Each structure stands twice: as C-alpha cells, then as structure tokens.
Amino acid sequence: MSEQQQKGQPRASHERFIYKDDDAIEKPFNWAQVTRLFSYMKPYRKQLLPVIIITMVLGTLTRLAIPALIIMAIDHAIQPKGADPSYTKLYLYAGLMLTLYIIQWAANTYRIKYTNMIGQQVIYDLRADLFKHIQKLSFRFFDKRPAGSVLVRVTNDVNALQDLFTNGVVNLLMDCIQLVGIVIILLLWNWKLGLAIMITVPLMFVVSTALRRRIRFAWQDVRMKQSRINAHLNESIQGMRVTQAYTQEKANFSFFTNINSTNIKAWNKASAMNQMFGPIIEVTSAVGTLILFWYGAHLIQADEITVGVLVGFANYIGNFWDPINRLGQMYAQLLIAMASSERIFEFIDEKPTVGEQVDAIELPRIRGDVNFDSIVFEYEKGRPALRGISLDVQAGQTIALVGHTGSGKSTIMNLLCRFYDPVHGAVRIDGIDIRNVSIESLRSQVGVVLQDTFIFSGTIRENIRFGRLNATDDEIVKAATAVDAHDFIMSLPDGYDTEVQERGNSLSMGQRQLLSFARALLADPRVLILDEATASIDTETELKIQEALKKLLKGRTSFIVAHRLSTIRNADRIVVLDHGQIVEQGSHDELIREQGTYNGLIEAQYRFLSA
Image (tube, rainbow, N blue to C red; front, side, top):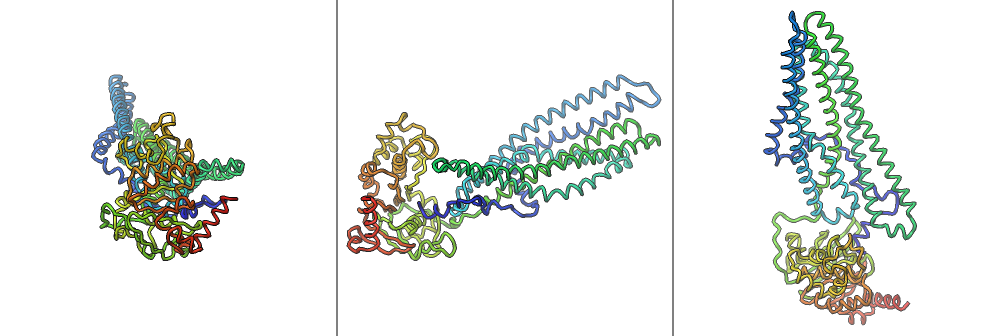
C-alpha cells in the first residue's frame, strides 16, 4: 500500500466520519451566493423570459380578474340596486369566469412544463460543473475525504435544488406580482377595510423572521448527517468482505443505526421548524378574516361598501394568504437550497493544491531523462516523507525503488506524475520543470500500473481502451497479446466483449493486473511506472509476463516499485530508500557485494520464502 493510501485510511473509531468538510458552515445568509446560484439560469434567459412573461401575466391577470367578476355578478346580476336579478348578466359573468379559468389553466400548464425542462437543464449544468471541478482537484483533497462524503455533494445536495430551479423562481415572481396586485385592488376599493385586514401582516413577518436562522442551520445539520451516512455506506460496501470475515456485522449495523438515528432526528427537527410557517400563516389568515367580516359588516351598515365588495374582499383575502403561505414555503425551500449550495460551492471554490500555471507550456514528446533535484516533501506539515532526494535517470533506463513500507517509494512516483508537488526542490523531465507544463501533456506521456488496479464496470475491451480512447480493436488485441492476457480473455464467455463488474470483482487479482498492463502498453507512455504492479500476481503468472515486461520496458524510462527479487534484479539501477532518503544505489550485484540495507532486504525475503 502506498504512503498516501495509508495516510488516507479512516480511523477505526466511531469518530472516523467526522471530517472537516462535514462541519456545519456557520455563515450568515448570503444573498451574493443566492445570486451566484441563480446565475446558472442566465444562459437560458432568452428562452425563459418570453415564456415567463406571457404565462405569468396571463395567469396573474386571470387570477386577479375572477374575484372582480364575482363582485360584478353579485352587485349587477344577483342583487342589483332597485332592479330584479338579471340571469342574462349572470350567464355572461359566469361565461367570462369560465373563459378566464381555462386561460389560467392553459397558461399554468405550459409554464410548469417549460420551466421544469429549463430547471432540469440548470441542474444538469450545475452537476456537470461540480463533477468536472472535482476531477481537477488534487490527491490531497481526496486524502482527507471519504468517497461517500464527495458523492453526497454531487447527488443529494444538487437534487435538493431541483424544486427551486424548476418552479420555485417563477412561482416566487408570480406570487409577488399577485400580492402587489391584490393590495392595490383592495386599497382602491376601500382603503379602510384594506388596511384593517393587512394589519396582521407585519406581525406575521416578525414572528417568521425569528425562525429563519434556526431553520437554516437545521438544514445544514441535515446535509452534514446525510454526508456521514453516505461515507459509511460507501466504506461498508467496499469493505463487506472484511466485515463478514471478522463477523463484525452487528457492530457495523449498530454504528450505522446510530448515525441513521442521528440523521432522522436532524431531519425531523428541520422539518418541524419548516412546518411552523404553515400555522403562522393560518392563524394570521384567521385573524384577518375575522377583521374582514367584523369591520366589513360595519361598513355595509354604513353603506360604504356593498355585499358584493365584501364577498370580493373575502375572495381576494383567500388569494392573498395563499401566496403568503407559498412565500413562506419558498423561503424554507430557499434555506434548504442555501444549505446545499454552500456545500456545493465549497467544493467548486476548492483550489487544487497541484495547479497549472497561467503560462503553462505543452510538454513536447519526451525522450525520458528524469531528474529529482533535492526533493523535500511532506503529507503533513512537519513530518517529511522525503528528505532531500536527488536522482538522475537517463532516457530508457529502468530504475527499481526498494525499501521498507513508508520509506517513500510511492511518494517519489506520485511526484513524478505530479499528483503532489514537492515542498522544496524540483522534478524535471528532459530538463523541463514539470510544474511549468500542462498537467494533461505530462500525464499523457506517463503510464502508471498500480498494485490495486482499478477495473471499471463495462467490457474488457473498454477497460483496455481506457489507456487510449481512439485505439482500434486490433491495437487492443495486440496490447493484450503482448502481456499474455489474450488467452485468458478469449476463454471468457464473450471474449473482449465480456462485461465485468465494478472493480472487476469477477476477475482474479492476476487477471486484473494483466488488464492493467495491457491498458498501460496501449497508452504507449514514454515514462512507465510499475508501483507494486506484480505484488498480486502468482508466481506462474509472473513468469509468463517477465518476457512481456522486457518488451514493455524496452525503449522507455521505467520506474519499478517492488519487493520481489525477480522483478527488480534486472533493473539498470536499484535505488534503496529508508525513511525518505536514498541510502544505497547500484546494480543488484553491486548492492549485494556492499552487504548493506539492500542485502538485508534480500536475505529477509529469502528467509520468508523458505519458512
């Protein structure tokens, strides 16, 4: 296992899922961030604005006009002053109302359908931006975070924004316009009654404002708890074999139950706070209705308003409190969105610790001269993993790195791929500091085969082609044949088109390693890194690929991190590391004669094999 993997392992305690990124984000409500969130709708404004304006105007005007028609029907058709009821006028008003309802239904249906489409596209863009940025982040970012914690940002947190983008924004605009329209109409008809009814609105806002901060932090806590559940699920599924092998199912389930219970308590708390908006609106509405009928009856007796106006007011008041209620729900929805967007933008704002310079050049096709110049590196501040490493490698040479676990072998390879940058010193290829070149042009010419090779779900052919996506089928077969993988591939049910499960669990460790060799060979890198690449291959399989390895390494600058003597003894130079320093280097025979650290490692291996 490489050094960074060891450092990235979570502690085997009940605190292992409490990571820095899971802490609650204690920030005030930030309208600038809301603006940033809605900026994702900007590319669709030309498509969205005409639809919003037309459907919103039609829907709002029809909703405001219907109570006015009811007033006119009562005052001019049902109870006209000094005249008999007019059924003709009543039918006319009823027909007009039916027409308005149909227009309102059509406008709302089209608006909802169209805004849903645009909203889903906005969600697509946001999720794509987040995933694209995550792929650019450095290894240090992933060292500190479990996969489940990252996963929840791309799935749950983005999904939490769907309602806001699909209908929330448009409904907010419609409700605001409707409220303004109702207030104007009520004040124009009878300003006394209008003001009396709306006297309860300021009280409602004072009470609801007191809930805002608590609700926002409650939803942040929910997101944090969900992140921990995802982290635990991801680790548990990947480590299921170990859990079952040590019969720790009960302990694992007990821990999951604990964090699951914590999550549901946080959700219930946040949900209960959300639901408090409803009763506040209902109580305020009830008080407003009592004022309407008490004061309205007084105004009717004083002959200041008609019965139709009172009924119209009652209709408008119903239409007034509904958008108020929706605005309260919208605010709660906005709080949920804020909790999620803060976590999303926290990742998007994360800067790669290994980044490209503004004037980074494209690395030309390299010869393969590699120079490590006084390299100092540390995973954690004050604990150096490499201490002044200097190493010159000529193009085409094969260098073997050996040493005890934690001596710095894999770290050197990570610096060569620029997964990390050194604290001091420089890594140069063909005399060019790799920090001055684009990352893509560097890594496209450096091939890596790891001990824990990763096989993606898909076909064998697709997994090999991952080394070079434009490779032909013939080139894939040629690469597989060169590393002696062709025969076992053809023995599978569908040959190269055989579907493999996630991480290649249907294949043996040796078969997965052979596929990784074929993938690396197909990529045709100028510099090749084999990081414990033969550790999981049995002796018989290893013998088969020794000749293939000679072909693989020929003409390339190669670095081999390994313990097996058969893998390293033919290297041009063997570099022995201990506690982050080079203590010996030379050929196999030279180092054996020195009777130093290398000789001790070889003797220990012989004793282990003969035991």
